[in-house]
Each structure stands twice: as structure tokens, then as C-alpha cells.
Length: 209
Length: 410
Image (cartoon, rainbow over all chains, first blue to last red; front, side):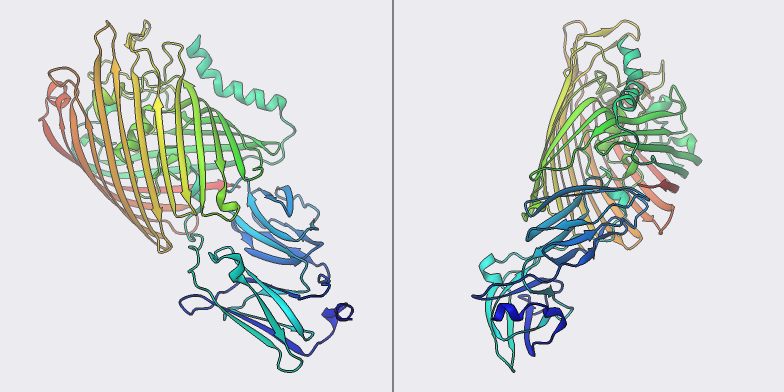
């Protein structure tokens, strides 16, 4: 019954709010983390597939992290004047895609859930992630480290992912009960500091050798 | 025959690629760099002009100079093959006004299962320098290279084939990447000659392929030509690289040109120089624009034309510290270097150190302006023996480098 009620969830309001807030050991928010929420002890139906864009701008992927429902398609338009050769050897999706100027390619379909790490075979410093999820509810935390969704009441299994996290996987999962009117909230205080962020601001010519 | 073959190597590689590769997938990417200098310098002339100066320019060269005129082109063939040619003129008295510093064919298959293989054939730099990371093997920190990298630019080049295998840990959730490099090469049997005779220098002049280092007929360096094959024996090197995220790079490499120290070239009347060295280095960068680089080199070169070996052990190291403020970069470097003389009289002995300070402004677009002060203090046996100079001397060079770079694609 619960599973049935999830069909067409994008179009309707469930009246209950699931809120997740992620805080770093220094108390500052963790921005841009991927949050996925599945209903515990029930059949979950993935959200409807979308058509997403992973662009290449100034020799970097944009966005740096994309989270999409399983069976979604992603196009790689290449807004740079230089060529790229996009690849992934992640088990969830192995592919390679040359992106030459003025030569569009059809979107790539991501039909298995999992983490897909993207690189460029020409520009080694380029790195991005596509999180392919079969969870019905997902998103990324905002500048205050928060994410929320309108969900049916129930018990939810919440998972967190970010490329710079050092926590054990078990510390990044939690069960949250979402009540009919008061909703449910999870505030996760991370114990380990993040890995260093990728360096920015160096001219591209500094990476020739 | 070997000489002819070696000169034709880049052309052979080009033809081989063009005839076997699938049709071009993309137009060529190319880059044009013009680098002009205003120089104020004291000291003897540089090696290429027959002097024993430790800097790129000598006393009589103060004023406006050509720093470098460079044209580089990269052409891909299909997805995984590409050819890279890098031509430069240094505005001095080499055999030819323009030459190739690098020219090679590269095979770059897509990474698989966390591993990446890359292969090169042709002429190129071995993966040693951690400061010369910019296009054209230039340093983004200073105009003049360290003593170590100046010597590599002068005498050491891989003319052969190299394979690199990397484990891309950072692409599978780990914090580290590891790489192995191995190469076989020829045409480097004279590497070490200019070091033994002329000592370490701090310059940004890169010898072009089959170019020369010294001035014909002028001792002690004469017309040293590092890129010669004299014994038909291949040299090798092997290296390791480890990276922590994009913050730390550590490199180690062992080089052996495997030259027969008794080999004589009857045409040029030169001997082969057996040169081996170990190099190590580390580069640290952080998010506030700081870079620290340490490089170390230790080796020896020897000749044995009549069965009596003469050896010149050498060592050098430097520490560089740089801070980037947006488009402005301030850098400083301290170099130490020594060539131990051969025999009882210390023929070729040189010991010295150098300070370099540079300010670079690179606005968005095509221009870069670098002001550099370089001060070298050295004790040199050959300066008294051949240059009528004092045993110990210091030399200063101030230069403003104005560079215009135009890139298509890349």
C-alpha cells in the first residue's frame, strides 16, 4: 500500500517533512553532500528518470557531483573550445566518450545504481561524480548543510555520500522516523575532518608535465 | 647512418602514424610563445659562447635579448594516438637557428580497472623535474631553472621509448596514486661532457635535438653535442612516482646512459661519456597558494678513452618556495651544486650555490611578466685553467621577461 502510494510522487504532496542536516567536526555545514532516503522495510520505487547535463567548462566538470535516478540519461555537451575524452571505469557504468568541438554525442543512459567516477583522458586533473540512485528521495545539501523532502510518513533509511568524507560507511547511514504531522529530522555530526579540497586557481599551463 | 637515422626519427614517426591511424578526429592544437628579455648581467659569457658563465647571459649581453620563440603543435589521430612537436629558437649561436626540444608520438589508451598506461616514442624529457611543469618544459615560478633542471635541459633527453603505468587510486576512493616509468633510449652518449667541463649553470636554455652546448674550438667545453649515439648500446631509466591527492608529488628516477666509456667517434674526435645518476624530488602545494619543491641529484660521469678512467662525480639540490596571490606569484629558490674534479689536480672541479628570487604577473589572457634576480657564487677549477678568471667568483643576472602566448585549442 505504501509502495503504491509512492507512484507519481513528484506530483503530489505527502504532508510530512524529512529533514537532514550535516555538520562537520568544527560545527560548519557540509555543503553539497548527496543524501538518499529509502523507505525501510518496503518496496522502493526509484524516482522517474530525468535528462541531466554534465557540462565541461574551463577544463572542469560542471556540476562536480550529479545525483540522478537510475535509468536517467546524461548529456555531455562540452562548452570548452578544447577536446575532452570522458571516461569511467566504475562498475556501475563503464564508458568512454570523445568530446570534440562541434560534434554532439547522444546522451548516456545510467541503468545501474552506484557511484560513477568521471575523468578525462586528456586533462588528468578533471574529476567529477555521478551518483545513480534507486532511492525515491534524494538531493544535495544546501549552503547550510541541510536537505529536506516532502515524504509519506514512515521509517526511512538515510545514506550520506561526499567524495571528501573520511567516515566509515556505517557512520554515514541512519534510520529516521517521519511522523504524520511533526515529520522527522536527522542531524549528523561528523567526527572526522574532510579530505583537502581539490586545488583551484592555478593556470592550466601548470599541469603540462 | 645512425646520425642520419636519428635526424629522420621524428619524420619517420609522423609518416608511420599518418599512414596507419584512422582519419583525424580533431584539428591540431598549437601554441605560439614569444619571450623577450631585458637583461642586466655581470660575469663571463655562457657556455654556448665559449665562456664559463653560470647564467644564461654573459656580461656583454646586457640589454634587450630574445628569451625564446616557441611553436608547439599537437595532433591527435583517432582517440588514443597523438603527435607532439615542440620547436624553439633561443636567439644564440647554435648550429641551426630553430630546433626541436621535443618531438614524440604518444599512445594514450583510456584507463581500465583503475590503471592507466601511457607510451611515448621519439624525443622528450624524462619525468624528473618538479619545477618545470609548464608548457615547453618551463617553470611557472622562475625564468632561470635550478642547477639540476638546467643541466637536464642542456644534456639529458630521452630519444627512445618510454612506458608509464599508473594506479589511479584517487579515482577509486583512495588518497594516493602510484606510477612506474621505464624507458630505453639512445643518442645520449655525450650527456655529462658539458657538466664535467663547464660545471653546473642556471639557465633556461634547452638544447635542441642534435644541437650543441659549447663553442667549437674553445676549451674546455668545445662543441659538446650531448645527443649522439656512439656505441650502439641502449641506455635505460626507471622511475617511481607517488601522489597524495593533488597536494603532494614525490618522484624518484635512476638514469644510466650505458655509454661505453672507451668508445670514440672518429668523425667528431669525441669520446663517449658514461653517465649515471639518481634523482629524487617532492612537491607540496596547499589551498592558500603555497608551493614548496625539493629536488636532489647525485651521479657521476666518466670516460676511459685509453683504458685510464677519469671520473667526475656530481651532486646538486635545491629548495624552492613560492606563493601565488591570484595572478601574482612570488618565488625564491636556493641551489647547491658540486662537480668533483677528476684526477689529482681536480680537473673540472666546481662547487657553488645560487639564490634566485622572482616576481611573476600573469593576467588573464596572453601575457606574462616576470622579474628575476639570480646570484651565483662558485669555485671553479676550469675558470682559472681556461678562463683567466679567479678560482672563486660571483655572478649576478637581473632580467625582465615579457612573454606573449597564443594557444589554439588545448
